[in-house]
Image (cartoon, rainbow, N blue to C red):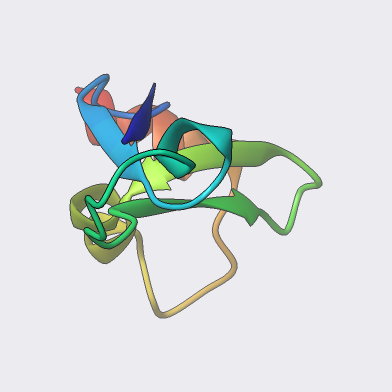
Length: 69
C-alpha cells in the first residue's frame, strides 16, 4: 500500500489504489485526502487532522499550521 505524510502532523497516511496495489491483495481504506481550502491552498491531511479543523467557518492554511502546534 502506498503512503504519504500528512501535511499537518507528519504521520504516514495509507493511500489505497494506484500502482502500489497492482500486485497486492491489501484492500485497506485510504486514511486521508487532499483538501483545497478557502484561501486557495492545498494540503494532504489524515482524517484525524481533518476532524480537528474548524467547522464553523472557512478553513485556511493558518488553521492547518495551527494543528501542528
